[in-house]
Amino acid sequence: MTGPEDRCRLVLIVPDLADAEEKARIVGDALRGGDVASVIVPQYDLDDTAFQKHAEKLVPVIQGAGAAALVVDNSRVAGRVKADGLHITGNAAALAEALEKHAPKLIVGGGNAMDRHHALEMGEAQPDYIFFGRLDGDIKPEAHSKNLALGEWWASMVEIPALVMGGNDPASALAVAETGVEFVALSKAVFADPAQAASVVASVNAVLDEKAPRFED
Image (cartoon, rainbow, N blue to C red; front, side, top):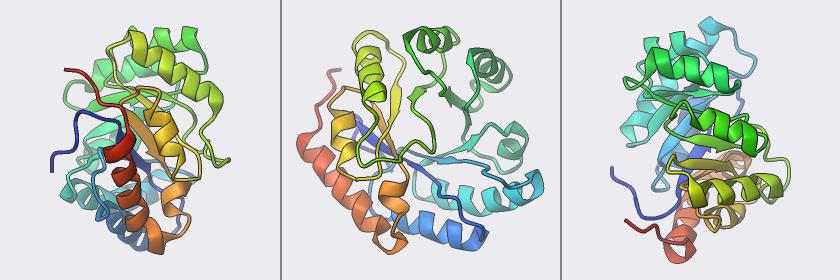
């Protein structure tokens, strides 16, 4: 599945659920709602064995829908489940190390860029994307104003794509897109009511199709 490359695209963050089957089903339902560029798979409090079992269920579902499966921080599990990439939550050194070991075989991107200085440090390693926000940062309806400002600054001057954490209201996706960044991450906005996940993904895509700024070639 190819997505709309000329506007901001949706990235999903898998919710924290104890049951691997249920988690895979809910994520699969959401992906039926329309275009999703990638799905980030955090480990949460699972040990490595349990996390691998969860990832083994999730990764084929994500890839089957045409999205990239990005495992958070755990390169061993990412390799075993044949994920598409790694999302690194550590500092610039951790990101650079992951890139050295795993790129270009895997997509490698990362966050923890709390300010311009840290973002530029991370950018020096040439990751596949920079993430502004925290994976569990969707505690308010709107995206955090600092992350919006950082994303807008980054998109205006750096070629490396940016991913900005949205809020827990699906409407926050448009505010992120309006900064000019390439990707918006949503979690609670999509998964708070699993029965509505597909329709939320569909409605977010419809709004982005209609209102998101278009990128120039």
